[in-house]
Structure formats: structure tokens, C-alpha cells
Amino acid sequence: MTNERKVSAYRRIMSSTAIFGSAQVLNVLVNIIRAKLVAHILHSTGMGISSVFNSAANTIQQFALMGLNVSAVPPISQAGNDADPKVLAFTVRLVRRIVLMASLLGLVITVVFSPLLSATSFNDQKHIPYFLLLSVAVFFNVMGMGEMAVMQGMRKYKMLAFCSIVPPMCGLLLSVPIYFVWGIEGIVPAMIVGNVIYFVVIRLLSYRHKKDMPQERISLRTMWTQGRGIIKFGAVMTLGSLIGTLTTYALVAFINNIGSTEDVGFYQACNVITVQYTGLVFTAMATDYYPNLSSLIKTNIQEAFRVVNQQTEITMLMITPLAMILMLTAPLAIRILLTEEFLSIERMVCFMGMATVLKALCFARDYIIYAKGDNKMIFWVEAVWGSAKTFVIMAVFYYFLGLDGLGYGALCVSVVEVIVSLILIPWRYHFRFTRKTINLIIITTAMAAICLTGSQIPSTLEKYAVMGIINAVCIGYCIIQLNKRMDLRAIVRRYKNKCKKVED
Image (tube, rainbow, N blue to C red; front, side, top):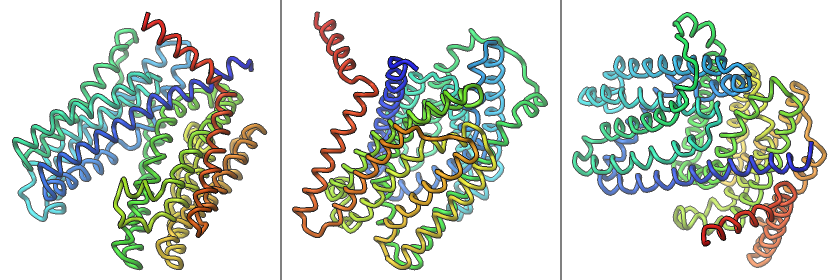
């Protein structure tokens, strides 16, 4: 492979990450603003009621969609590689038909179970009309999520990023006046308005290419026979997600019973700082990487494995300095994002930061399982084994070591995940890291480990001296390595030339 093609491949990864990372950051800001305004207008009671309706809607949507937003991406990506445009057109139309059925299922479930939802959520029957209205919001949200999967599979990344930003902002601008005028009574109408805008924006953009694609009627029988694999894969994803949700609940309940509600709050706060902080990068990277790998995995396995190695290198070069900076600035981040009351989680944040680096090591290679559509591996290894292992390790560490044990447990879970991944992925899929990738992994992981060790030094001066120096070394190393892969100087020169043209 020529050097120019390698540089182009690395730039593509960084470009897509930057686009979707920016969209994720804007979404987080919109959610923060929305939460602040809702708290100000609806107060704590309104926030609680809003949380109940959102939780109910999310649960129904997750069940109705059956993981189609993930399982639909590989077949669309693979169909896009076919020379016959009818193959892609049929696959897209098939997915849309399945999503429509899922949306209707969500609507019907919400309507039929509205009395039960009202009774279990509010212990009365007064809220049945609101749950009946909620069914409309569920329908449009499932439709929108399905259409986002279509765009991801077709790799319409600019439209995908646009759809990630505009609907939430429009929903915010329209929902706040509804809250202001109707108060608590406007919670469900605001959800409907937001989800309708979400779907309309996505549909308008996604259907721009529809006239260029040959259309074909798809019967219910064809939908079932041809789409059975997509539905089955999605069902496995949903079941795995449900197991993960139950495991999280069980761990929180264990901490609450063995320890205290305060410890639960500390643990959740630590997750907010560490998992969501780096989760933005993982989500942004997966948006382009997943469909790209899915399109290659069954047609050009060597090229697919090359992409996995490249993605691993970029992931490590981005996540490692971010995690190390989080370790260095943990007290400051806690004060800014939370309060001084939460400073006791500083050690936990550092250990979870190191766990994130190990997660980055497995991030790209573990996607081979999903790109292959390997249901057995997804269910038994990712869902059952992964959830059981996480609960047991975290529970044992917390039982014996208390709050800090949750940090130690998170790191231990990541170490076990790395070991299992290094054994299973080569055995089942014959994938190997290249020597260049292995060297980069060793160096970045070692620097993160030194930073973690430095964070445990009792002397404040020595602690921050060690962490500051290793952070500077890591940032410098990562910039040098990124320059080797992407030619950062050429990018800077191109940007300067564009700026000069604009000025002229």
C-alpha cells in the first residue's frame, strides 16, 4: 500500500472523528442547557415527571426497535459495495419497512399498556391520556433512529452529523416555550414536538437520494424471509443490552445494600466524569468505522484487518492523552463538574481513566464481532460473560475495599477484557495486530500506567511533577505519531492557504 493511501486512510479516521465528535459535544451542551431550563421552569417535581416519561419511552423504544439501529448497518454497507444499484435500493427499502413495523409496534405497545404504565409509574390512572400521547413520540423517535441507521450504512456522514445537531437544537427552542406556557402539562407535548422534528429533518435529508434509487414493492412475506437475519441480529443486541442494563441495576443495588446510597451517588458521578468524557470519542469513531469495517469484512478480509490496525492506532493516540489529562486534572474536573463534596472519588477517577485506555486497546478489534454478525459471540461473550464478569469483580472489590475498590475493580475488569480479547479474536477470526500497532500500544499503555502510578504518590509536589512530565511526554509522542501517519504539517499548510484565499 502506497504511503499516500496510508496517510489518506488515517486522515479519514481523524476527519470523521472530528465531525461526529463536534456533533456529540454540541448535543451534550444542548442537553445541559435543556436540563437547566427544565429545572428552572418545572422545578424538581417537573424534572421527576419528565424523567419518568422519558424512561418509559426509552424502554419501549429499545424493545420495539430490537437493535435495528445497529443490525441494519452491516447489510446496507455491504449492499453499497455491489455493482448493481438495485441491491442497495432493495436493502434500504427492506430496512425501512422493518423499521416502520417496529415503530408501529412501539406505538401499539404504548397504547395497550398505557393503564399499566400509569399505574406503575404514578400509582394512579390519571396519566393514561399522557401515555396515549406518548405513543406518538415513541413512533416518530423509532422511525428517526431507523433512518439514522440507514444513513450510517450508506455512509452519508455529513448529513448524519447535521441530523445529530439540528433536531435537538430545534427541539430545545420549541420545547422550552411549551414548558413555559403549559408547565408540567407540556412535558409529553414537548416530547412529541421534539421527536417529530427529529424525524422530519432526518427524512427530508435521507430521502434526497430516493429518486435516484430504483423502487420495489416489498411484501410482508419478503420482509420476513429477507430481513430475518437483520431482525435476529437486532434481537440478540437487544437481549444483550437488557442483560447489561440489569447488571448495572444489580451492581447499584448491591452497593446501596452493602454500603450506602451516598456511595451509589459517588459511583454514578465518577461514571459521568470518566465514561461520558471519553465516550464521546468512542461514539464519534464508531460512526464511520463500523459501516466501513462491515462493508470490507466479507469481501476483503486483509483490507478489513488493515483498517482495524489503523483504527486501533488512532484510538490509542487520542484516548491515551485524554485519559491521562483526566488523571492529572481529576480534582479540578470534580470541582467544576460536581462539587468539593465529591473529591473522595479522585482515586476512582484515576483508575477508571486507566481502564479507559485498556478499553481503547480492544475498541477496534472487538468491532470485528459485530461486523461479522457473530450472534453467538455477541450473546455469550459480550453480553452474558461480560456482564457476569463485571458484576462479580466490581462487587468483590467493593465488598472488601469500599469506594476505592470500585476504581480497582473497573481496572481489573478492563485487564480481564484485554486478556479475553487477545485470546478469542485471533482464535476465532485469525486477526493479529501488526508490529507497528503493538509497539504503539505498549508505549501508550506504559505512559498511562506511569501516570496512574504517579497519581498515588502521597507528596503533592512529587505527584504532580511526575504526572505533569509524563503527560507532556505523552502529548508530544502522540503528536509526533499522528504527524507520521497524517502529515499534520500538510494539513496546516492547506488550512493556511484556504485562509489566505478567503482574505484575498
